[in-house]
Every structure is written in structure tokens, then in C-alpha cells.
Image (cartoon, rainbow, N blue to C red; front, top):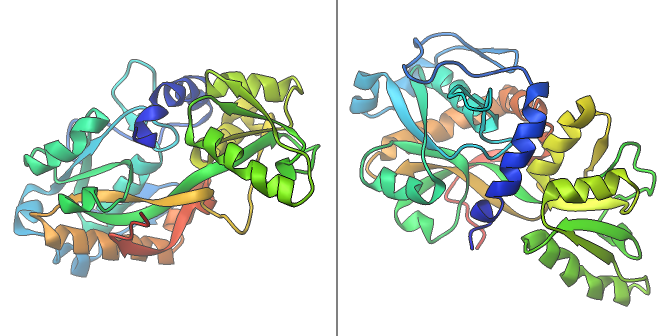
Length: 314
């Protein structure tokens, strides 16, 4: 099963409990915003005419890029208010920044995840921004501009009382994790490393939902929780106004353990759009805009060091 799909229910729960702590960054997505200066994450972004000129004629004529996204999946995709239609999130903010740089509007429309790529193939959307893992199978039908790297991360109580720094420091400790996830497989697979190092096994505590694992962390029944790193960063940023948990950042795994690239999926019918987005993303990486966007969601470490095309690792 696709990891993205496996975490839908847990992600929705995180969004419901955490979103109120972040002010809205998006706007009304029913109509394109005027091209020109755009402000995202406190950064003012101006149109780069040379990048605008790279766009396909149909995009320039329409003045917008049609973007499919599956909501909610925090911190990438969220609704500003439960039951509303206004969007926010890392992907949405990055899309607004890319649109500002390219001089067109990135207009987001919710679409169920398993229907996103077929909708692009059918010409209903130009691109998708929805924390999509770039893999070689998907590359057969869409191109990717990779903008983040996402793997498993470690969440600990504020102050990190057990001094957890890496996966190795989980050996001999009680660790919470959601059942039937890649993170559970990661912990099981690390048991051999613990044994080889002469350390005790990880005492794996499984829970139906990530939120249940976080309750165990709060009550001291576990010293750490392993979940996707973007979700861990978001929870650390928002739970109790950022005072409940800390995110462990292992310098050897900046995007998380077993990280894979997430990409902006672009129609193969629009190669000029792929190239324009690639160059616009690099410009936003170079001037610090991407770092500012990611940092406000607590996941600065998952940004790619350099924009890349079709950089799947499978």
C-alpha cells in the first residue's frame, strides 16, 4: 500500500487538533490571484520575467496553473477551518511562491489521492502538489520536480529527557509507534542493529493511531514516538503551542530515516512547465524562501539542497 494513503486517517486527526495554532496562509482558491508581487511566509516574491517566458503558451494565456491536491495531509495540505474550503499548508504556500516567481497563479483544487495522476493524464490538471513520492513507476506517466525528502522521524517530550538523538539511542527504550506502518517496520528492522551493538531490544509499543502514541508519550509510557518526519515536525510545532514535544534531528538523516523524494508531478504534455518550475524552485531555494516556508511548519530539515527532476531512489 502507498505510504501516503496509509496515513490518511491519522493525518486528518493531526490536522484537526493542530491547525488552529497556525494562522491562515492561503486565500480563496476559487479564482486566480493577480500576477505580480506575492508574500509567502513573510517573504515578498516578485515575478521573474525570464522564468515567465519559459512557460507554455497555454499557461501564460490562462494566467494560472491548475493544481490537484489531496486534503488533509498535514503539514503539506490542510483546510484553514474544518468544513471550509480555504487551503493552507506547506504545498499550498510553496505553490503560491512558485506562482509569484513565475508570474501566474497556482490554483489548488482538492482531488482524492488515488485519482490525482489519472486526472493529470486526462488533462484536468497541469500539476499536482500533494506530498507525492517520486518513484520510477509514476515517472512513466508524469514528470517530477523534487522539492522535499520525507522519511521517518523521532518525536520526544519537550526537553528530550531520555536524550534520544538517533535510532541507535532507541535501543533498550520504550518507543511508541502506530501499528501497520513503515515506521513499525523500521523499528523491527533496527532490532538486529541493537543486538549487534550489545544493547537491549527496542521495547516497541504499538497503537491504533499516531494520536494514541502521543498520549503514551505525554504520560511517560514511552520515551519517543516514531512517525513520518513531516508529521513529527508539525506536531512538535503545534501541540500545546509547541510546548509539548520536540523533534529529533539526526544530521545523518536530515529528511528522516529511509527518506524518499517528494515531487511536484507535472503533465508530460507540458515539458516547458516542468523546466520553468524546476528553475523557479531553485531560485526560491537560493534566496531562502523555501527555508522560510518549511520552517513555519516545523520541517525545515526536509527541504532538498538542490531542485532536481525525476530523482527517484527506488
